[in-house]
Every structure is written in structure tokens, then in C-alpha cells.
Image (cartoon, rainbow, N blue to C red; front, side, top):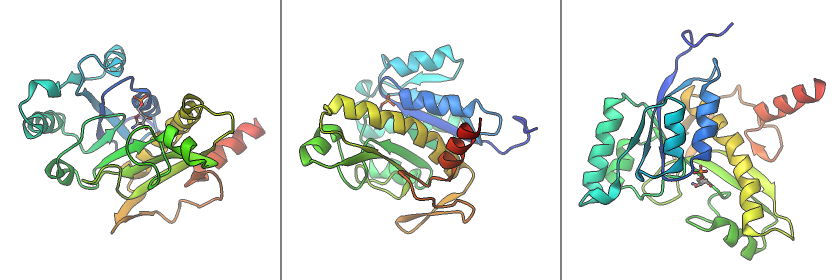
Length: 234
Ligand code: GRF
């Protein structure tokens, strides 16, 4: 049986600004004995973030670094970096972290910082993605996990999940459907990065050959397909 001690676990910090439902999905995934990640701290730039309170109830190191108390973005990031160093963080996962980062900070974490965005990038960057998707009349929406680059919502794509857009959808309806997909895809993508099965080559993520590209609305889809199959057999 796999135990917590016999797999290599990457030290991960999760950065949030709000309710933290994606953080919760990562924390829950990291509770599995075979998940190759240890969540060593949760950091919020907003002291009142609901997700921070939740992290504390789980016994996680939960820190507030209030950006409003800093004179500059650089000064805020210097303290953020100090906290990451202190916790010997190897990978950073942004989960609804609503602060723009300087190119210098982003470059420091090149290929070691990932983000989840509620659209099928490169479509619908920025805020209000669900309103924009409905206004554009797209029939498929979704979410993307990607490595972070200095330009907002760009960077090599690790995984994407697609969901249908229904004629009756409000932005809230679509947002809820996309969020459920986010909670599935983020732990999966973090696992790929932590194990080294997803690596960056130029602007593209290359996946280990053991990852099969099954057709489907979740890509890479192999894990989800096998989960669904095993549920059907049960
Ligand atoms: C998610 O939709 C995520 O994709 C975006 O911000 C939202 C955060 O939600 N970056 P939560 O705080 O994880 O619930």
C-alpha cells in the first residue's frame, strides 16, 4: 500500500483572494496518500478571505499578506517571496488570486507557478468570462490550468475541461457548471506538474507518453475516463 512517506511530495503554496473553492479541491486531493503534493501554506492578499478561515480549520498554515498595507507591488511581493522561502515552497498554485504580479516575480517562478482560469484560453481572458462567453454565443465553454507568464492569462496550457453552454444559461448558471469542472481539472493538472509528467517545451506543455489522449471534453482525459469506467463497473 502507498503511504504518505514513500512518495516524493512537492511542497506547494496555494494563493487565494476569496472563497477558495479551488483551494479546497486541491487540499482535498492532497489528502490522498498517493497525491504527490503537500500543501505547506495557503496565502491570501485579503485577510478577510473566506478561504483563509477554511484553511485554518483544516490545520493548514494560513497567512494573510495584506497588499493594501504595502506602498508598492514590489514591496508586497518581497514579503510574499519571503513567506514562500520560509515554507520551502517548490510550486505555487494560484486559485482565484486577484492580484497582478510583476514580471520579475512571475519570472522568478517560471514553470513553477500555475493558475486556473474560467475559460477555454486563449478565449476570454480577464474578468467576467461567463458573461463574455454568453454574449459571444459560444456553444462550449470551460476552464484552463496553465503555467503563469507575465502577460495576464497567458502561458503554456496544462489541461482544459469543456462544458456545454445552454440557451437558457445565465452567467451564474454557466459559472456554476464551469466551477464544477475546475474542481476536477485543477487537482489533476497539479498532479501532472508535481510528478513531472507535464513539462514545458517552448510555449507548449509536453505530456509524458504514458498520458493517453482519449477524445473527450476533459483533456488530457485518461484519468477521468478510467474513473467513469470504474464507477460504471461498481
Ligand atoms: C475561479 O473561477 C477561478 O477559475 C478564477 O477565480 C475563481 C476563484 O474561485 N481564477 P474560488 O475562490 O476558487 O472559489
